[in-house]
Length: 227
Image: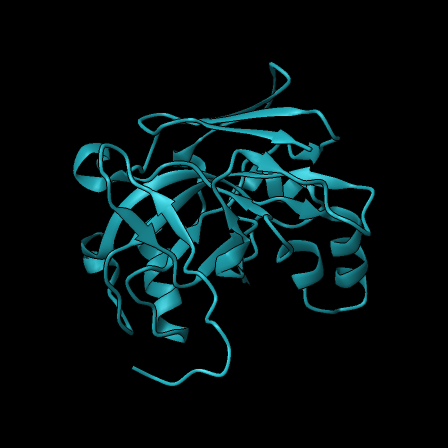
């Protein structure tokens, strides 16, 4: 065993439905501008390709609570389908992509929209608006053997009982196989990686005390309270 000068960080894990085992998170890839209606509501052109960015593994949080982050007065919810990989590689074909999937979950890409806007205006990276503490609330992973390919199905988010986001997975611009194939062209993707696949229209601000419930057909719902 290596002689480490400090105690290593704890591995981030996600619960698995009907299992005592947990899924260890290696990397978090996110895809933006992947639903046409959301692209339009954010003032962009849906004809342009989606974009990729990353959060940190320890941004994933399964506690059911989201602490309102510092240095922001405009934090938005973005409900997403999460893909969890059991294997990876480079230059994976779209035809082979589903063979690398372990399962799926409901997730939230919480965003400091004001800080993201400042970064975008200055042509700077988005990390300050995206990759902050507990910015990726995550639900339980369901295995692909029970869910199927998740290429269609209702995706919706309620805030305090009111529906804010409402779409269908079939509206995704870059389908799951293309996402995996594209990522594997630029990265050595591997077991433990998760992909947040984009959000439908209706993103908006949250405040302390809000109760968020994210639902995707075939998956266990995600319930989060803003504290």
